[in-house]
Length: 529
Image (cartoon, rainbow, N blue to C red; front, side):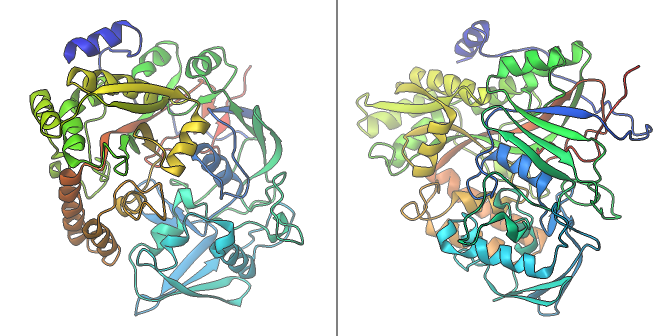
């Protein structure tokens, strides 16, 4: 298999070289400068402004415009944002939040507790199909039974029973549980896609579909006193304008960066960052939580056979893929517990070993007769495409008949949402607690096609992981879940992407964090002579 990878490398699909020694080059001694504009590359358009029809790019943009009550810090703890503080009742069931003093929406209206309740009721309405409803309606253990507003700055949430994941889920980046102005909807309750009235330090000024999304600084923003960390704390904006420019092609985005046509290129492939550093760019890197995977559809007539799935696992040299795809910066990890997580230890890398002979024996036992298996991928996310090419080659070497089906990203995403695939080269954006990732993996495929693993024992363990805040207890539960996963092989975890963002030298104050979301607050542009 080493020969296959070397040939792929010579073909230009992999950029193999020495491991990168990437560091944050930003000097914190410089004082921020107000004004100016930066352009940040995104590889696909904003899907909507209401946060319900979402993807990673949409999350990035909307979390600049809107604010959640609480948010993740750099260390993955939960800190304040729109809520400046909160108290928890002695029985652990009532969370009472105090809203940040001086918080206003972009139209000048003050943010009140009534707005918080309005947003909550709208999202929990099943007709809006918010995919995070199961996280709060009791379907997955956590149930909010009441939301009350004793005064304009106070809002309380009552839980049916204590749950360790309540704040974590409120801060869940992908849920987009932020607080929007009720004036975003018309009299019939329909959201106006041409506006996004939030309380963040940036406001939406133009969305030119297929080209860019432009935000401007909200001059009346009143930040918290707490230091910026992750998505929490001080979100003071220094830039006048931030433009998210849509450049689907990876090579074209690098060309734009090197030509100073864009200022920030998030999520650059680690194997390409050496060139960027040599060209004088600022290269910032850190451990990440975005999980590169190969999805397996266990409802498929062929892949429903556990022997076939195990044979696939034996046929793939996961360690070599992780090493070569990330220039040695990330290690193989088949579990939903990332190396960056405080719960991680080496037992989470236990997995069927690379053994093509064992794969062939299992195929013979399962009477596999060369039936074609389609592996879906896309070129919008170059890593997904290259992982697909490598996995196809490895599976072919072990006797599988695998066809690589290259789709546009929107079509592949639709197939993921509908569960209409056999294999997919895919990636999950950062989930900042293992329970959040297990929560979107484990469940009933009939009711939620995006669930990859239908196992009642694993599901009960997942629920148990949310019922305790004890670190050792939760780690022990995660280990039990992983042991079951290694038996069922419902998904093939490859590695967690390191966070590697690149900026032009004039961009200052920009930082990366495990949440892997670009943040334009706290950033400024060095004035040119």
